Length: 454
Ligand SMILES: Cc1cc2nc3c(=O)[nH]c(=O)nc-3n(C[C@H](O)[C@H](O)[C@H](O)COP(=O)(O)OP(=O)(O)OC[C@H]3O[C@@H](n4cnc5c(N)ncnc54)[C@H](O)[C@@H]3O)c2cc1C
Image (tube, rainbow, N blue to C red):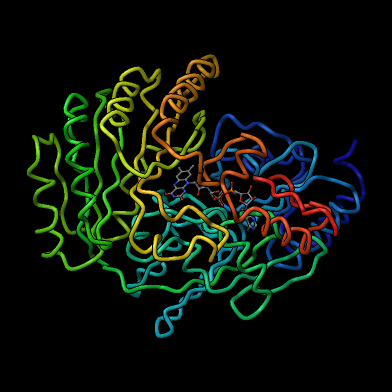
């Protein structure tokens, strides 16, 4: 049997980290990811502790002809951070975080999660744009782009990347930055895990808080069509320092609702004045907007996203929230088969839109909103109803949305959709893939195939 092969024992000796095999006590936790729909069984999970470990795992998988999955935080909905009959390279032991307060830089290991990152950088009053849920991995998030509370003021996570250490398919350990391997640096800012395994991310940091104005405004679902129209006009005038996420969800008591989450990255008094019209509009059932530590703001939605539930998501971008689109979304939410499903509106613009569309692999910089349809439920027998709800809703939103999609919200939707995630940047990505991974070794991802040799 493969797990008893001496080769795996040799692999375990070759790496300083851990090799988890079927039958080991933590095999089940090592092979699972955040999305409970994903149930794959790799031959081994290599918990790498250094770039050399990663290179050893790559060499082992190459020798065996095994497919390789790469895992940062394990949050990706598509479940590509684990695999059947292959090797998982898991970065979760690589947790180092070195903050340079004076230089406003941080170097973070490939297994750092956003909750850990925010806590370390906020200790000295710094931050960069990170994920809304603390258990999301810095790695997959940044490599796909990275949308978050600070993106309108500080840019996407990938826009704040200064350099990265990457282990390539041939086992080389290279640095990608504006000065070294510039093509690779361009590609990993949006191009996902296609080009190698990133073991260290270096970001620029910004002075943030540590106390910011933030919290929640919650309205009854019946008021959502009206309140979302006001929200649309309000966001159209909002400065870059203000972001207000909006979403349809169900309270723990089972009440469908519209939630809005403002975060103002600036002086508290200025934020209070700016937010007054939004807070006065309609009759919110909850208004808990107040000065809060940024690290607390970064945990507000965490209870809505525990690991292990069953999930199916689809997404697109819209330039505007038309009346019709608002009405479609609200009506659809009333029909959601599960209280754990959500519809999220993420306002773009600001610093994101000031970067040219071809400056990084992440391309979608001119849209007004990212629209994310998140199906979430508990029981496998409800899979079909919930998947159908997301698919049907996505279909009816299409006339009001762009065909573009954020790569980090893609499931297993196929090559055409990956191309839509990159638009005109796809051919250049494909050329760079040919240079760094000509045999498509890193293919368990939103795959960009190498361009054919000239
Ligand atoms: C609860 C939840 C909240 C989220 N919130 C946000 C949000 O606020 N904003 C946002 O933009 N997105 C968000 N996402 C989506 C998120 O950006 C993606 O799921 C992202 O891929 C997660 O990164 P990860 O490292 O946790 O994922 P993983 O599943 O570990 O990795 C995803 C893919 O990235 C690649 N990869 C991972 N690590 C490495 C590495 N070190 N080197 C090379 N390739 C690697 C691999 O191809 C892998 O398949 C959220 C997802 C969830 C489930």
